[in-house]
Length: 136
Image 1 (cartoon, rainbow, N blue to C red):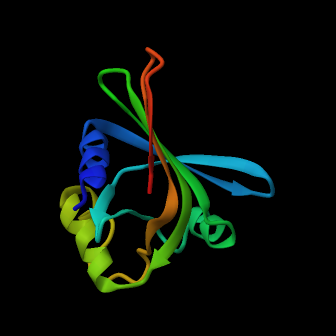
Image 2 (cartoon, helix red, strand yellow):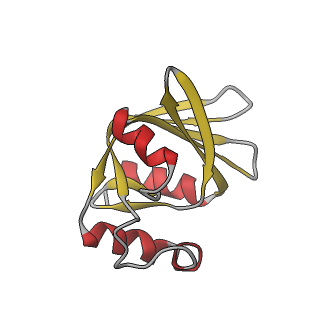
Image 3 (tube, helix red, strand yellow):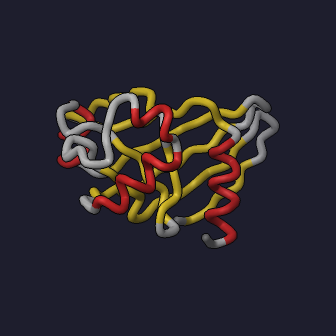
């Protein structure tokens, strides 16, 4: 894992909740997501191919994820995501937070697509006005 990815993942681990924003018909859609992980030096998340979010991402892969830590700082990750259909990616995500994911999905599920940021920007922000930008 690169140093910049270590910094990003360290920040993500301090956050309890994340929200994923997608777009449909030029309108934002935001929902909570529970698991983000690093795999092959990329930021990954999962959904279900039976949910509206899956269709929104397939139609427009530009998304943003936001999370806030207990210190009042937050992280924003925006960019283009693409689907990774490999079993290896699903296993990496499940292994990162087995309790949450295994209650809903199995490693063998074909309903649990994995997405990763192909490109984008990470912003580490605070209420004090601090803002660090990291390119993915």
